[in-house]
Length: 441
Ligand code: URA
Ligand code: CA
Image (cartoon, rainbow, N blue to C red):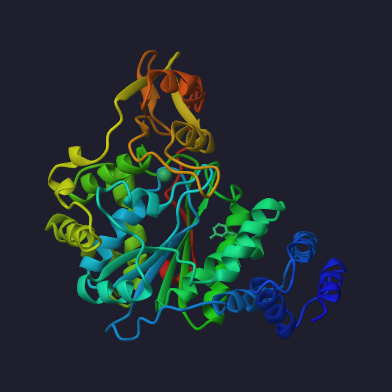
């Protein structure tokens, strides 16, 4: 191993061979390569970048660093989805049961929230009794039985990413597109699905706010998927305002139940039908997006999505009575409306700031080990383009104490930028590859 040479090659803008990339990742994961050398290499990559080939090879080296899930015993095309994360992104809780109800089994390895973005595992854990600590065997058995399982990332899967991501967080090398792409895709590929649908967010509340960055990340991840022989597609979707009205774990579970019952936020429901239709198309369960939407609409209307959600919650040990009676979910004692100080139209929502406020209330975490409070968060009542009059409610803070609500009230208020008029935001900006968006006739 010549780690110094690999660092220098990158520093000077050269490319590493596949063998060097594999040795680097393996050596780092098993401790032969120390943090300081890996950190130097990561910083060199920040300046010099990785080629598409290097990025794909890094991803596969990480995928192969631990156990891999084998879903081949389950009949049919198995799907997975991933969102790069956002604020009020309740979509997984809705899309997963709907798509499974439409006949596509899903095994999802999910993460916890970090920083201003929420995570599916934290949201699910707001359900009393639920366990997301599934072994690989549990996961496979449950997908076979119920069609759907969601497991927290275990130490056995992709240990290289676990160790390298932690190092990146401490060395200013998280926001490097090739690293984000390889980190996400190594975990998705180890998850064993036949098709992977990626939702790359763009806008103020996204991991990568600029559209060009989001597009590059989506293209890189789709390319990696194809290199690994897995059918992969991406959408680039809007995170310039919270996707749904709820931000916070139990609040988002309650919103998901509302949508699965046919109510809830129109914007969130529409988005879930779009993302779900993309999944069905990718998994050959629909001929095109129009057919996919129609199938999912039916699963919403006849309650199959809701009933699948119930079976999934029970299978993972959760209290499925929350579906008939969402008041069984944890609730915050203080519900504190934040009102507008002027008339106007909502022009922009400082989405990242709303995510940060929810963290301060306890709904999210700044460090990996921190605990979250399932009950707290925000309900956003105004969106971009909505007219607001002085005194009207912009959002409701759900907090444990009045003093905590008061402490964030001004931040919530200024997150709603009022003006004369607003430019409406689409839900989805583009699809990669573009052919996935083509419809019949
Ligand atoms: N999410 C991941 O899983 N990895 C990254 O590097 C960034 C976001
Ligand atoms: Ca969230």
